[in-house]
Amino acid sequence: AQSVTQPDIHITVSEGASLELRCNYSYGATPYLFWYVQSPGQGLQLLLKYFSGDTLVQGIKGFEAEFKRSQSSFNLRKPSVHWSDAAEYFCAVALNAGNMLTFGGGTRLMVKP
Amino acid sequence: GAGVSQSPSNKVTEKGKDVELRCDPISGHTALYWYRQSLGQGLEFLIYFQGNSAPDKSGLPSDRFSAERTGGSVSTLTIQRTQQEDSAVYLCASSSQTGGNQPQHFGDGTRLSIL
Figure 1: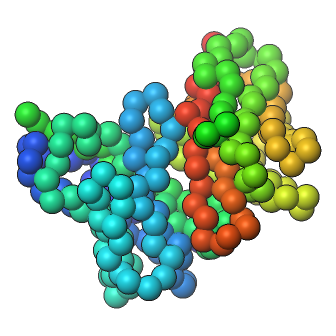
Figure 2: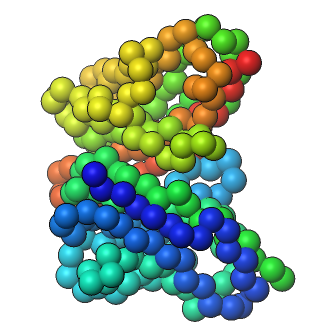
């Protein structure tokens, strides 16, 4: 069965510092890959997605992610974190774009002033 | 509407009661999903509707859970004889299948608390 691992439960970074959130997946083929962000009391907002092609994908709010097939990873990055980025981040995979998502456990990001 | 709408936003009920949660997907979206988010289990898939096809119920945790989608639009998730372990945030998502490669868009969820 496919699975998604986000090794870091909590991460704290200073405002203006760079950020990398890790995501590893286990699946026989290359799945569709997603990053979502969830602010308290709200639903999930799509940051970016990877279906095929260029392995570096750009998303909203200045985020990007790189798909590395050899490492089964899809890490999320941002060059300079803003206080408003504090939230919980979820990596997810699907067999295809229309199928149900399997989520990682999430990483809670805190931003120090 | 502009996004996926869920109601109620919060629901508190006594153990043993039945509850109904509503999801209004984005207009024109043919696929609709229910997920559950709880402290112990994280985000879990429950059920998936696609057009007029039979729903994929493989994620429903017990036969106390059921869902329907009327007219290919609004969906209702029903939990019968609620238990305390049903306390969670129930999230609905929809996507358009017409163009391919369409991701899921989520509502803000219903926070269900079982006393």
